[in-house]
Length: 254
Image (cartoon, rainbow, N blue to C red; front, side):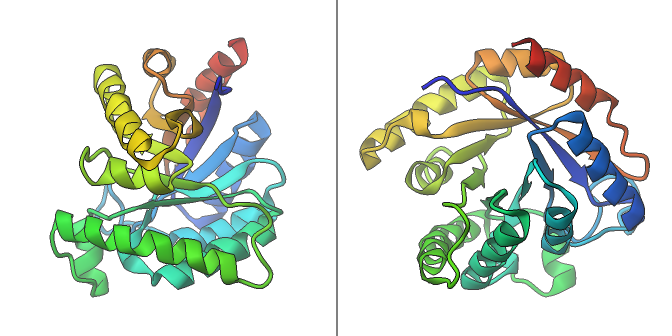
């Protein structure tokens, strides 16, 4: 299937007052962005490691009230931080607040400081992936039991590039795969994902390929490699949307 190019922005909830974050969301939707993401951390990833920071899903609920058109999601929720049934209920609730615009982005987690400071067991990469594999069916089952049900079948985005475990989970559970790859690596991993999809009896074309980009040159090269959802990250305190505007203009030429 031929997918339209979509542009996301990741408004990183760090080094800024909430008023600045809210304004960045307003400006991004006004520019015509397709998806507005944040991230799921408890401390900044760049700049002052103990600088200002806000929690992801609480913000997403506020953004759901603030916005009217763009889809909303966490790029990505850390599976370790919330009970799977609770996460399903949170996503369903924000889906209703937004009128059916939530994407449930999820991954296995990696930022050790979050774990240690908030009392979660960091464990091993393999153990965290096994926990994600156990959580995804529980999330799906809970979404099927909730009253009221979600407004729509909430799209699931899985982030990561592990070829044996993560891509198998993508093939089994995801509507969107977010990859951290250069064009050559993306093409190769899309081939591996296709093999996992075949093993699941699924068409790999059902899965949207998502990547992070900084500029039009990177977006164009990754588009040639098969990506169609491109997300530009912006950080506080200023939330400069200039790079996003250029990528949106590129989208509109296609």
